[in-house]
Amino acid sequence: MRALVVVGLLAVIALVFVVVAVVRDSQGNAGTAAGCPEGWPLADLTLRERKDVKINVFNATDQPGLAQSVADEFSNRQFQVKKTGNEKKIDSVAVLRFGPKGVGSAHLLQAYFLNNATPGYDPKRADDTVDVVLGNGFQQLATTTEVNQSLGDSGPPEAPKGSCPSPPAKK
Image (cartoon, rainbow, N blue to C red; front, side, top):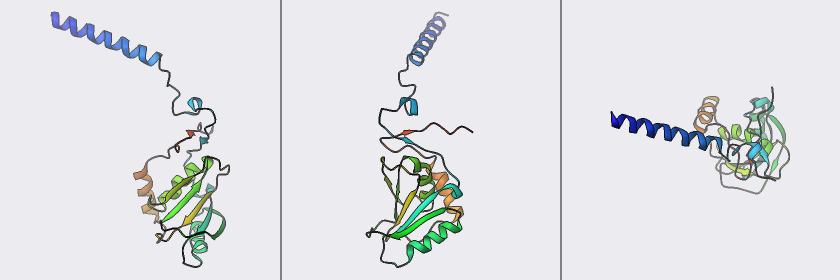
């Protein structure tokens, strides 16, 4: 009987500590726009539909016409291709360059490269367009099934280091 009283008393004390800790929590806004340090950009983590994603496609390989052919593939998949061009050669599969407004779009595009594209986050970039820079390691875009699997494996978009998630858009 005495042991039961002691266990009950310890449970009550633990409950009091938990309530006090929750009430006094000074990090309740951590990881949200309200808890964002001053000057940090707000990252748009909205996973957009393909038709709402704006991209530029650049060829950073020795293969002529690659940017245009991949841009055509993206257009056929309902992406908004704004421009194409050439860039200095890179060896990786691809580089995705984006700013705070393009975080969710870059997350979606990453799936088209099976999460093998190098992220190129620029906190000062003001637009929501993502630059897709194709490198020598690029072979082809992922199929719809591969894209869906890749999105499932990668989880939801996350705010890049030095940014905070923006509040969800009101519907």
